[in-house]
Amino acid sequence: MSPLLRSASTRTPSPAVVTTPDGRLVADRCLVADRAWPRMRGLLGRRSLEAGEGLLIEPAGSIHMLGMRFAIDAAFLDRGRRVLRVAEGLAPWRMAACRGARSVLELPAGTLARTGLAAGDELRFAPARPAAGGPGKA
Image 1: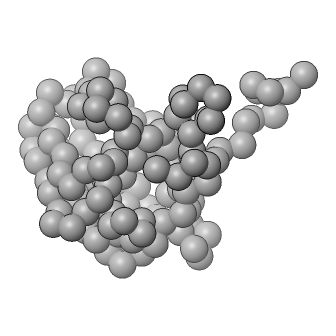
Image 2: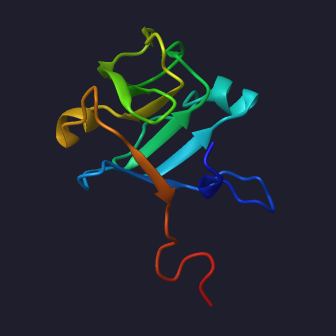
């Protein structure tokens, strides 16, 4: 995982902004699940994934929607964060996989269509900036 997305002192995941090189905003609040428990839990227990949110699961080449309450979009990424495959509107109780994928970006249903994200696109992850008046502001 990129050290930009993890606080060195606390090892707590920080939200990331996900964009394409041409400037399309994919998610402005993406969390990373790169340890066993967060990867297993994923989005289970959540009632929804709001617009702008995302979850990057790594390492992962497949996902399941067992026990989920809502549909999502998923982008399967290679080691260089290039999209190998997209799965739109993945419904609860379904599974999806992609050979060669190193990670999966889970997004609210409709995000892939709205952003035009497709196989072959490259994604960039950068730390999210705190909102004005938010944490870190005096």
